[in-house]
Length: 183
Image (cartoon, rainbow, N blue to C red; front, top):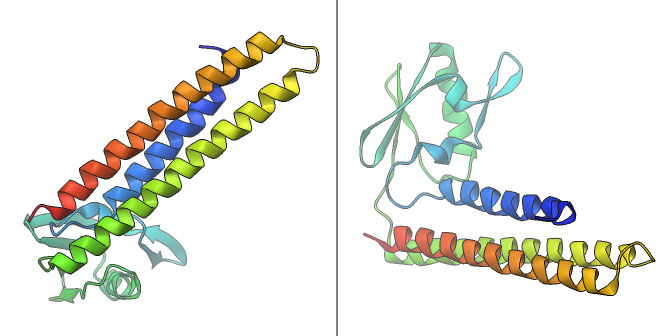
């Protein structure tokens, strides 16, 4: 592969990876520890991921259990979960926090699928913007450095790459939508 194309492929790949991470945080009715990935607790004055201050387990299909290593963190973790957009009320028994995920309603599932499609569309726009940036950069090279044929060839390669990553985004969207709609 041409070195000039490599940087654009890397950016497109990162866009897909970001989308995948975004999708991992969307809950689909089952307990998924990744929904906690973006939450931070105040640990000695430092915002720290919940995974680094306690043990996270899934004792049942729809329950996440968090056992903080320090009992003093229970209130902090509870506060972080309450103020997040998870929409789940944590319950604690003094030593562990339990998050019980309710079964999703049909309406909520459809809303989540709309959200998944919106995120996929944003990722496709990002991929296309990367293509545009690449084509602009290639046209600037045209000022005597490379031939018109080479520019056209680079543009064609970039288009194939774009098509590949747009398909990848579509595949991720289909898989997540199917997961959400599965009862």
